[in-house]
Amino acid sequence: MTTPTLTVNGERTAIGAVPVHTSVLDWLRDRGLTGAKEGCAEGECGACSVLVARPGTGTPTEWTAVNACLLPIAGLDGQEVVTSEGLGTPAALHPVQEEMAVRGGSQCGFCTPGFVCSMAAEYYRPSRAACAGDHEHGENGFDLHSLSGNLCRCTGYRPIRDAAYALGDPAANDVLAARLSTPPPAAAVTGMVSGEGEFVRPASLGDALALLGEREDAVVVAGSTDLGVQVNIFGSRPRLTIAIDRLEELREFSVGSAEVRLGAALTLTEIERRLAGRVPLLSEVFPQFASRLIRNGATIGGNLGTGSPIGDTPPALLALDASLVLASSRGERVVPLAEYFTGYRETVKAGDELIKTIVIPLPLAPMIAFQKIAKRRFDDISSVAIGYAVDVRDGVVASARIGLGGVAATPLRARDTEAELIGQPWTEETVRRAAAVMAAEGTPMDDHRASSSYRAAMLGQSLLRFYFGGLTA
View 1 (cartoon, rainbow, N blue to C red):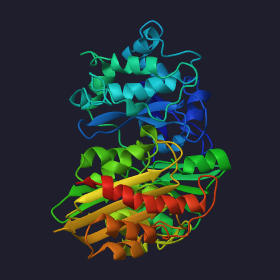
View 2: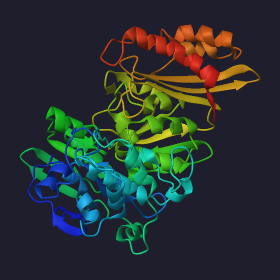
View 3: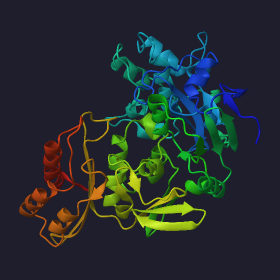
View 4: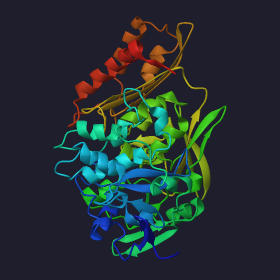
């Protein structure tokens, strides 16, 4: 292993002797790059947004906006970052900075560098031009949802939108645009130690599994959208952190005739773009999963690995009858997702195992929906989440799978409701009878997000909503 280094705004820089849980944000600010700021320390505000060179889906590299407050600097050893200072200078503004300035997109300026970095990521998105003209894209193809997770509390969003929609294509001599044509640097095999503990990026899955089997105090990290919050807000300092996000063995992607296979270390954005709508139920989930900034880092394996009862992907994956491939030094085993969760944040995954692959069987059910009930439409934790996959043949329900989240200690299948539907005519009478059953599924609790009675009512209404407005895949 070499001395940990990082390319920042085109200059190779040693990471130096810093605590292993130092965030990218704190590391940058300690070096005078103060455009990125800490607003919330949990990925909610976007004031800390920076660009990282990541493998692309349409080009070798994509500039990806991420929350610098959540990522450990040790996790970027060998990689390449651009901050708002690296986009342009006061004498030569970047096109994004220019449009934000002339259209009044900045007032106090606290959030502006973060907006600029997120906007720049969309500016350089290779497929942007193909998206022009629908109700959520400008005539230049700019996707406004690329700015989700960036908050402004004084300028307002119209001038920011105006700036985004005014952007043209990158110039022929744009260095960052030219950078897309060559691969990003590979994540370095890393070993950093400080008084806080140790950070390791193994060379292979085998090395990671061996280390995981040896150390009971090990914590694995991929996108760090969960661990970063634990470090920032709750003072967590794992003694050993094992980075698995760039392990090729965990980044499988394939769509065959019998199944879809998704590597656990693929980010939600990568999955969304590579699937390109081929699993419509997941296409319903992605826009409602946190923000683009979070989806750019969060992995599907991480969302399942936490065992949380309120994760957004489990209800949909339960409805899709997904299975997980769990790997350890002892070998691999396949576990149906419906048998994976055992208690609150508890699963069948052993301490020396990792989620390697998520497997979705084909063909898919023709009638699908994902419903998320939350206090905010986007970037919020669900009070109730429901995934539907139903097949009706000749007017009769041939199969029904319904995944639930937020109504028990674990995500679960609505088995009683499914049994009430299967073999019955797909009519309002059947659905109303099954809706009464569904209202009693799970063990809803009272908390600050919703009362148990509200959750039960939402479950019952959900099935009716699906019947009257469900999507056909």
